[in-house]
Length: 133
Image (cartoon, rainbow, N blue to C red; front, side):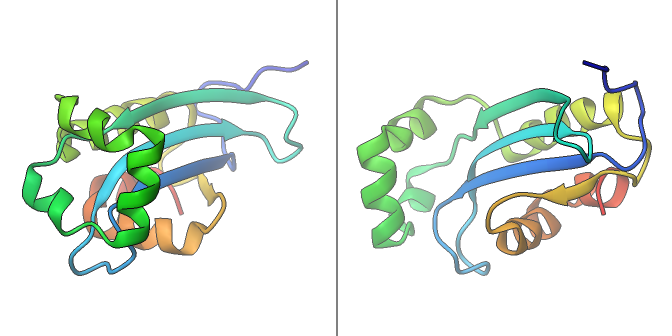
């Protein structure tokens, strides 16, 4: 199996976000996981999976569906325990992307990627501007 070359072009950047809800005006990212593949899906690099700390006011604004699901999965407790800020999570993801994707060359992919893309645009602007399209 061939390896993905450092700073390769046109790689798929798979992103999965867990959010506090879908209203982009009041909800936020609570977890981000990322991976990179080539277009043939034969080469895979697992990236960071980061739970982001938020204060209780963010958890209080979580919609009912998210609160129920994230309670069942244990994510709410992990959010409380996390020491990682949104900014630090963004920096970690940028560092990962810079290692494998030439500037602006990563193509965003994933399930419900439209919503995830808007969250990235709003909350992780440095990632979108420099690493994915």
